[in-house]
Amino acid sequence: MTRLLDVRGLTAFYGDFQALFGIDLTVEEGETVAIIGANGAGKTTFLRAVTGMRPAVDQDVVFADTRIAGLSADRIHHLGLAMVPEGRRLFPSLSVEENLKIGAAGQRSGPWTLEEIYEIFPALPERRHHGGTELSGGQQQMVAIGRALMSNPRLLLCDEISLGLSPKVIREIYASVPLIRERGTSLVVIEQDIAQALKVADRVYCFQEGRVSLAGRPADLTRDAIAHAYFGTEDA
Ligand code: ATP
Image (cartoon, rainbow, N blue to C red):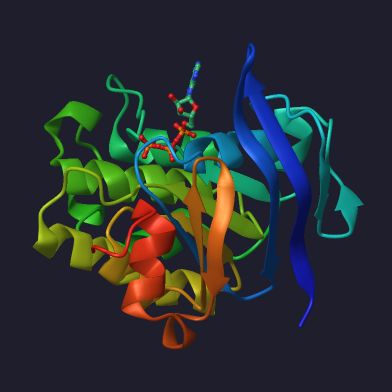
């Protein structure tokens, strides 16, 4: 397997406040990696530091054989690292299709086209001319994922894609994960729902107070170990 992302000793600060304390995390090509952890554990900060949106202090981050630490967010995006931010952030005055096309502007070539996005999210084609505000939360999330995929990333980073959605819609969205992988895009998903993370991921990292508290394959992680790593107690 080829190592796609190799993060060593990543730290990040907000002013004097230290949010990350030396995170080590890897993603192999073709993997889906989940990051779990309680509110404030540092999951979003990790994604923002890796994608260059938040300056990290000590960083040794290699993506697709390129050292990306210190590069601009734009350069990192062009190398094939895309993020679906928490909260979706669609352009409300634009249609579904216009939002998707914006994701493709000036980006890499690869398997992802409008047709491919419509294939993995069958709810979208009939709404292609609808505005962002006319969509349900789940449909907006599909557009947000589609928009990021339109840049043809090698690695897609998803920040809490199930936040605020019903279990049925969450299932629909997660049904796209194997289809995304089949087309050659690897994934990192931040997920607060532990069961969902264990179901979808090849490997899971748990963050606690800015550190990796547990890492491994779902089948090797016990419920107690996860509860301890997640909450810092034995009680799940
Ligand atoms: P959540 O699930 O709530 O998004 P998280 O695991 O993604 O949590 P982060 O959002 O990365 O956690 O936050 C990590 C820590 O950094 C928290 O203590 C948070 O309060 C702090 N933090 C996050 N953003 C900022 C900011 N812009 N300014 C100051 N502190 C921040």
